[in-house]
Image (cartoon, rainbow, N blue to C red; front, side, top):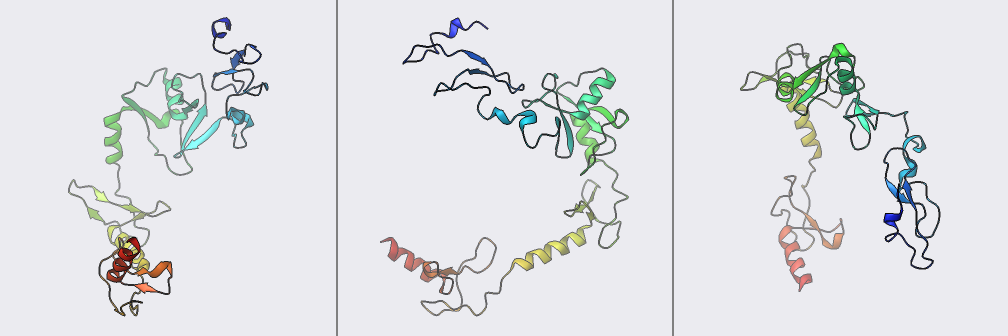
Length: 243
């Protein structure tokens, strides 16, 4: 690299010494940096690039998982992302079939991707258009789904004829009735008992207005939880303090 064309930019104002440039030694970014920093100390890496690759404590030999998909570190591959990683199913499909996936095409998994499992073997991958891929995902056969609670095959049928299945945190299917029950239990569990509360100022046992959760709006005087205040008195006190 010819550093003479940078000489008018990188001269020290005190000693007039030229600050030579080079590439970052992390091996992934190819970023151009100065050999010395502002304090004239030698540099090897760009800012925060010292933890790239094997120097990073989370290094997994160039393999990582994102949304249950497996990614490989291949910075020079044509389909590499900005961080140098390539989706393994795209790499396997292109290399096995000797093709190039165009921007309007995607790779579909016959055996679907789920938590802890991503089958990227060639016989499990097919190339489809983006619109076709969305249709395949929407028309999966859900007739074998069984509710994890009531062991029922029946659930709510939408207008387009598709069954509406819900899923719990462990990805187990739930019918609409069991889902409504669980949602009702969670909703009522959050409700608090506001009976017996009396305003600290006016002595009223009720208040006006509702909070964003739908419960009665009780405030506290100066942030003291032992001094509940109704909404009207709270507004009066707020106006006095504001004046």
